[in-house]
Image 1 (spheres, rainbow, N blue to C red):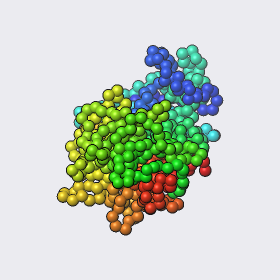
Image 2: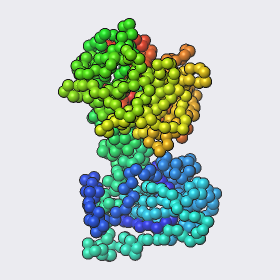
Image 3: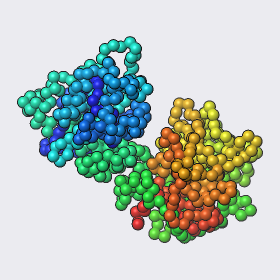
Image 4: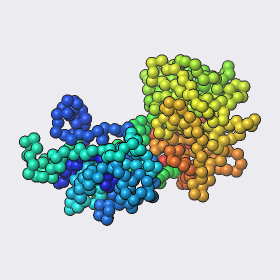
Length: 626
């Protein structure tokens, strides 16, 4: 992997690279440093810099090959590409000094780049010592940017520098290039810093600087193993896997299970990794889990049978997963009876079987509603068709309570009564409701949010300047913490109601949320998913979306799986071939995602919803019991 500058401009300081022997800091040392009062840090000799105190700032990461002439880049991550405007294929194989040029075709660095600092960086690299400081760089379009840079050489077992790792935090440079004619950045390297490599120099009575630095990494006085782990934990699993091929030392670092967990947590979020840790990783390990979820190499269909019974029989119920339990509520019984009972299937049991839950204060019976899980064990029911017509009420149930009791939640102006809408949970505790159908058959296009963590939850409509065409039977999936993907459904187009095959996305955390259509193409010779409604949409831990099942016109097979990564610059659909026998039909309201790696489809092989002792499981990763 490669980072931007090999020789950069700006002011900074360099520090002696630590080698074998001496003190080696452990992760606990980093925690102790972070917990120190500010007064102690100010008086400390520790050369703290703010570089690693910005976990929310996107971090560019690059690697250069120090054994090749001119130290060409061999890796740049997507943050580098996004912020500089250069694609990886444009810069790999080049020395990163091109960032000192305002124009991609320029033959020399910009006059505002301080040549003294450029020389200082070159000297640090030649001597095998680290550099860190602020640098002036330029995007591909010529926009000036400030780069907080740290360069660290990587040595092999013989002490030879094999690679240069660069870590960069970018920000806008608030300068007017038309008014300045002198270097923006002045060298701040003190004479003391220039003497880092002088073993005869005494510093604060602590002995020779060379002896102090031996075995100590410049930043945070940590060993370079800890430093590398701190860097690795901020990359994506794919980037870490690529970086592991740089050299044996880095490969060893990438094998650390704690680092792998931090990498997954950084990419997938604490909530997702917390769920995976409780249910998946004990035997698999984070490295294998990340690989299997990225490559889908272990994906397969399986069939299982369970005991118990859900009686009376029903259809059009709603189901979701709460931990390793499948929960089913309501549904449409014989003669259109509105069911109001709750059933649970515990997958942790040796012989799982459906059991009716003894609850108090059941919500009014209904079908065409949604059932969601928040905070691991709380269930939320919204809307649907009841005995007196359509509903817009909200009920919550703590499944782990000694006496589970449904409680109604009300506050603010609720959405209009509806059925066959879509819902999802954001950040583990916020319910989002979208679309559906009114009692008069009018399709809806609104989106509402209910934060159930507040003392008095209040409905809030998410205002948007434009919304996708009104629809029902669509899916709503979460990626990137607060971003939603809407796909499919029975949509209104002009005076017609047609199955939809379009995908839309919105970030509800933006100050002014805005829906936009994803222009998804087929990957290579792949086929885009046919238009459908009441399908299954699975939000994977890595942010990708799996689509299958539902009601599809024509001769297309509902069992075909399609994969979409909505975070890509140009999203494209991919076919996923899955071994095993899939169900002939699968419906969104009767499919549950367990632990982020198991997709359970309720009902018989040909889609009979009332046959609940037959389940089909789509395994996204290897099961722990295999």
